[in-house]
Length: 521
Image 1 (tube, rainbow, N blue to C red):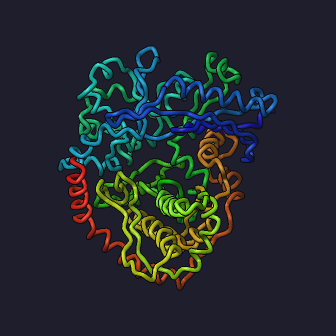
Image 2: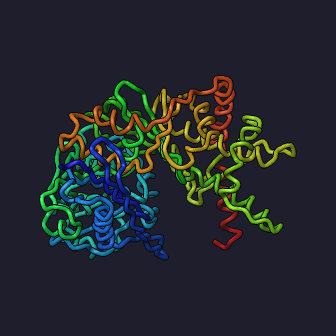
Image 3: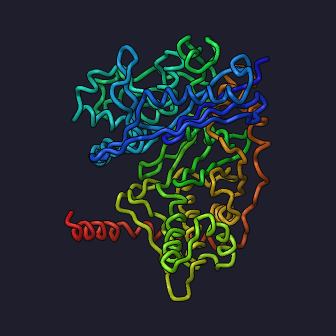
């Protein structure tokens, strides 16, 4: 009896294989730790061959937990880390290591391209702001500095595309990464104009065919069957990029409901479900991503804060440093266990925090590498609880800033990520957005989302709505409605937050220039 769907989620640091029943129940998990290398010139690279070996190993690990897995498997689906450049040659061998999304070598090229008056035209076709993590600028860097590498390459993959190739032998990509990097989001295909704007028209042959994973699939080769222990011919589905699959698994799609999805993690990911290309909102800063969504005709728009819960981690670490200096040893977990009570006891909007703590500045909904964090309105009456509450509020205002750049605020936001367990984060975010929030109980939303694509592709469910009713809705908590009094306070406070954000950039740049001079840079 075939009753198992396997979802592969190949992250930058961890590759996971998760087995689900066809009804959406998680049956088993196996994870392999991956690694990457930081180079002196800003490069961040990963071993392409090891990524495949670890993916295959993770499936073998599932088989140890589930007897008869090979015979029970309906299909395998794969998603993975976004952006980056994974090059292979004509015979399918890697052309050097992969460049992952953390690689910064193309930063100057991106700065140069974004300053061009032609960049707005590219943005209006792709719906996506240019960034150093993307494959287009990375290939342009190689063209300028490593032309011999490009000369050896036959195909430019993203991570999941490479794994799919190893499963099936097919050189393809999906509509999400294919179009936000090189394409026209309205046509869900490549655009020669975009490729030319990136200076890569001579390398357009590197771009693989785009296929739709909810309706097309490959078959496991004999070699891949030997590596994974699955049966030759097992259907394999190419998913969308990991952030889209995570949003699908966490609940971004429910027919008839105006939804957003926020991943409350180290970075802040904020996505809005868009029913058609005509409803996509392109912001004046030319930032964010527009990606096809695995529901016919629909899209997800995304804005991302570089620092999400990193702001909270920083504040906790400051407190831990003070305690340690006095001989008191505590952990982040110890402080977090008391954080919600401290935040609840503090007065709302008593202090304003700009949550741009990342050394790389900010990327959503505006781009400024000099952006830095700040507390505004500080006085002697403020204590540690006020700092914590202001930090939670700052993260929520940053989320509202991002959603506002994508159109009207959603009526309901689905939450996932570790920090979504905080009652006060949910309470404050709901009021700042004036939206109801529901938290997903899915621990492996990305793998669940890509397995849902396979379930639709292979006919287990007639469409994504029927699949979501079984795979998503039972795992969502109750709607937590916004506190009307708090929402009114935050409506007024957000206007001040936004005004400060608009007026701080000259000060950020002055501080950056001064600090650079002080350090002899």
